[in-house]
Image (tube, rainbow, N blue to C red; front, side, top):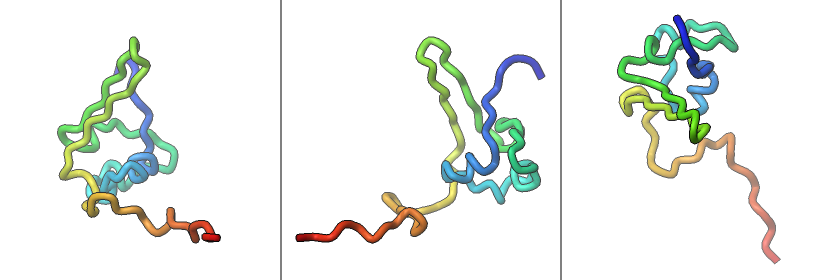
Length: 84
């Protein structure tokens, strides 16, 4: 392995909506490890644009957790604000 590659932990990928449990390399990865995304998920890739300082991540839709558009997990809900 030569060159640079993005360090995306399974936890980071899960937070991005990737179904990490469906891919053995991600499911078995140690906490904090950075498995190669292209090896873990078929057709996934990353590309870093040095000029723009931007990381492009491409993951097939089939590898994502299915949820309705606009769905917000309950762990992100709050009580709101009081109206006057």
